[in-house]
Image: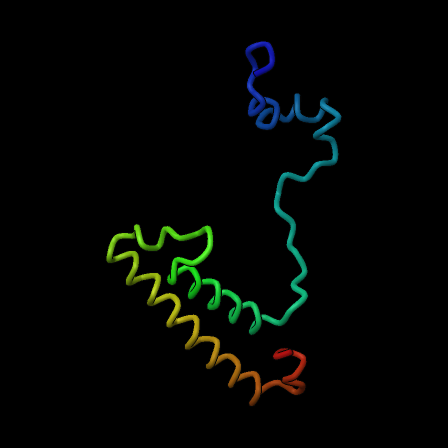
Length: 104
């Protein structure tokens, strides 16, 4: 805090935020990031990350602390991701003019 005023006050108050040079021109909304890989690869990566999370490998190993219901939902999510990935990839192969553009 600066003389009794919190940092959040400067962010929430447009009149003060615009006067502070640090915030001028700063967009506080997240920007859309360009994906450098096709959607099908992102789904495959998310599935692989979910599997690793379920196996409780690495630093994110709190899956074992979940309630049984949350564990079931996480495993169901992994299975749904795998199923969606397979269906989407098959659909791309049949319906896209250049499927290699969407799969590689």
